[in-house]
Image 1 (cartoon, rainbow, N blue to C red):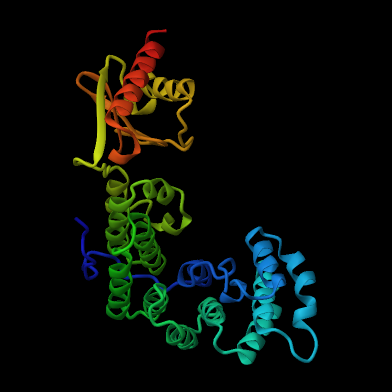
Image 2 (cartoon, one colour):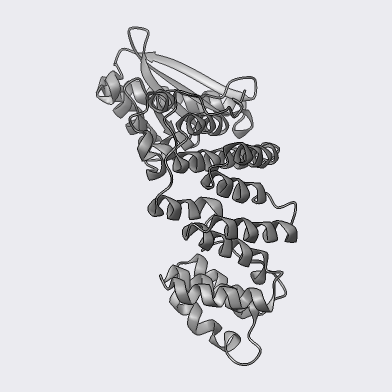
Length: 348
């Protein structure tokens, strides 16, 4: 069950006013990475140059975009869609002034470019012009009232303005919509809200939304460990407890298998974790090389979730996977083989 967003507890330190570095970090959150999102201009039916320009932007090749779009952005009747893409390329190259100029020109030609208003709102956030940012995001909302990012953007700016209740109301609406989507979409939404709270200095609210994100997809916990957005929480006991908490899926829709071994986990220093990784490589089962290792357990992700910890006087390996990923007989064969390989590694 998800924990509801709660008012800021009195034990939380007063939230810090975001400095310019933090505000620029929030640009990524508030406009959902405005420098790489595909604007409507790249949709089917538009000139091929626009689609190619978007492809180059997605590939991180902004300089080529400028050469490609020059015929469409120069002259007496420049294309608003091309100007929008060109401004994105300028931002990627660090030419913010020229990018802003082209963005404003694009919106003057065609004020219905929703992505343009999102980009402009992000620029205003970076400049700490929050009133202007709200106005830009309101225009984006008017162009598409049902867009999922409306409440996220507006809530983030309300948070920067110090209007916590208003921000919470916006975030609650954003999360309610996301929670009706896929687990991955819901997890990412809660993570984004947590990141906004972290940037604004609300520690308890950050931890609450991170926990909600992890309940949808606990692989995000590893991402949070290395995300600089949460650096100020490294010494927070609530955050540290959360990082040590697992959220395994349970129930009839999950395949599970468990085996005890004499070898111990020992905080990742014992032989058991190494034997698991060796067995996976030997079997050819793909897995993520970024293993989450804590003093109490380690998690290996891939075709299955593998939990390694101390238990039963030695160590234990627990495997799980969605029920639809393998038939019961396939699951039995795979786990039996993998357990045998682990035992063989430990015996060698």
